Length: 432
Image 1 (cartoon, rainbow, N blue to C red):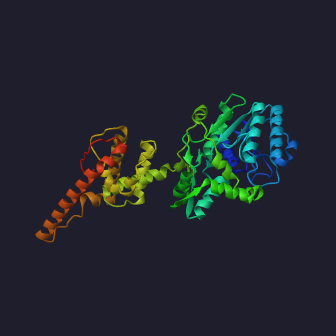
Image 2: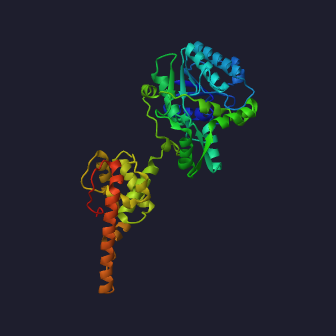
Image 3: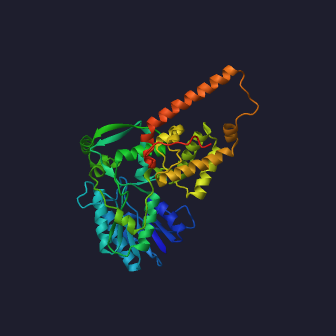
């Protein structure tokens, strides 16, 4: 498929160009300036001068991403006129038209941005095209609104906890790119609007906290902020100044309507990645999760922190033999590996418990083949107690620690075992 993409140099556009190329499509970028990639086809496109634009021959589909996202001299009417001309040009060329809109698109939206998106949707629908309403786009390079949020979270020691809490439906930028290509290939219903984002909305504050934890790797204090007070401040600044500062977007945030996304995601055959995973720069933190899982299991077996080489061996084994998905261990197991003893049981009660047991066995085999494992399990040869008194005290200490640990494990088991489907305590010792 030969695809023309307006706004191909933007946040979503760059990722779409990359995904389209990987999928074997030919891309023509329609942007104001020539792309840095000389192998990429290019035609000049400017929203302010769109009426002189003509779609080159041989184009099968047009994806309209170009938009005014910051304070600009381009008026909403100019943007709407450009979309109308593009739709007419696509029809003349016999090309499919897809417009990337926004979750805030609505006829009575509180901002010109949302109203403009809704107006363009009507044009695309009338032309037989498809519109996509994505939720909060995040991940990948720190660009667009996502880049602004990351920079703010990185710079500030606190994050706002708006009251009442606005809810958003995030979608990773790469998942959105995949959705656009899938819509061009699969959706035959002309004039439809697809709503895409996490099926379960999350609070904006929790989204910022995830940025802090997974992207910035820092802890941020949540400070309650009344939403009406923020809106009053935005109003006092005036439309012009609030627009230049980007604060007018808060009106849309506080007024965003939830979307039902399950059906549209199913139409496209799209499964969104977990938000925490998507915050990784690579867009996928499975290896990091596996490394944390392996570190915990190996530390439990070895009685100390394992070296990177052993952990890397564990990650490779799970990727090759178990599909590379992490168990999703609760945080207490990764922070305190010794607590894994409460799920180290010979009697399984669920598939999760069976998988946990398999991985503990794999970690044991890896540990035993390492120098640290040999020292742990075989001990230092040639060493004997210096005296009967020392030997007796060593035995007493070991017995006391064993009794204390068994008592602590029995008390903690009901809470720690629940995620693994294990209903009653059971233990067969440290997997030796």
